[in-house]
Length: 411
Ligand SMILES: Cc1ncc(C[n+]2csc(CCOP(=O)(O)OP(=O)(O)O)c2C)c(N)n1
Ligand SMILES: [Mg+2]
Image 1: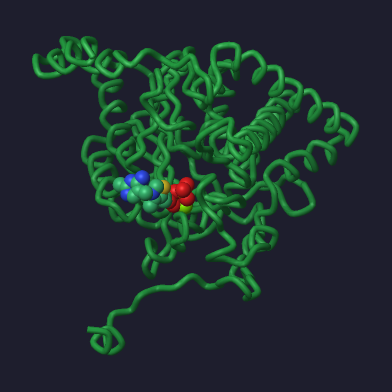
Image 2: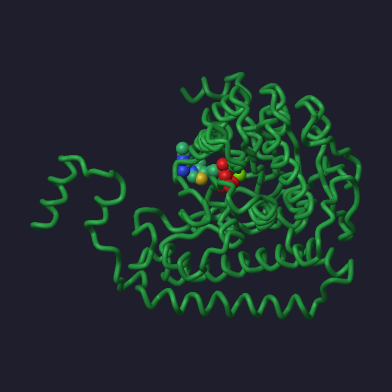
């Protein structure tokens, strides 16, 4: 068996760099301003081929914005985007510390990917539907979710809106049209297409946005979604977040020989690759895709090129499988610093304002935590009552579950 394995002619990809090696991203050649922006409401999918093969960037490495994709946003909008990103980063840091000190059972950060859900959700309308993964909690801040309620969910206490039925960070936020995050990765992609079709069927100007990871895109769910979106011309924005890693598995296990973005083209979908650490570029391509969907031209497939700077989750140790400083070499840099530098460059921000923002966000998180534990902490509860296992799944509880419920109440 062992010797057969050695003689195998099957090519098994490996990560480009492993612990102890020096990471480098020499293939990064993209400058902002070098990609034309087709008219969203008239262009055909094949007129987006240059966008799928290239990389849409607006911000350069010095914080300067340029090119046709510059969304020309009001500084007020940029400051709000920066505030949400800082809020998320500080929230993540505090929650991770809670996990490490036994106050949360599990946690997942969005470190390095804060711009993705925040810029993209800000580019949508309030009634648009969100089908996220665990790496897009930031969309909830944009939709106005109360942080206390998010922490109550992560603890699983009496005020957890989903009553302990999900793992921490697997949020649901009905008022924000932020659909429950699924632990089995990938399921949300085709569900999003279905909901987009429902909006279309009802004649509503609603667009659905969804994200899937590079790793999960190797599952059938991803391809079913692209096919359905194309066949039925669904008003959906299909994002593939290529953050280079799927836990310890490198993205090249899922890409094969091509890139991710161009996969949308043979399905007949407008396809774009965007710098996922560039707030302005993300905002711009999402607005473009929304406009297209709203005009009846269907789905856009977007590869969001980024880097997962932190561990996969609180249960993961990336030093086992990648060089520890790899994220510092990522040519896309840090999304928070890039937007901050841009705002400073255009005279709309300062280091002092940044410091004030960070301390305001830190107090917000600490205050929210103090408020949340009034409804129960991990060690002592109170927790949602156990009979909630049986409620809110079926409109009418089936007889066999009713029997189990009654049995549990007798014990
Ligand atoms: C169907 C399924 N297979 C495997 C897992 C275990 N798992 C959870 S996250 C993950 C990696 C996903 O990586 P990627 O899709 O790139 O998303 P990222 O975490 O990088 O955002 C795996 C394998 C799962 N939750 N569901
Ligand atoms: Mg990934």
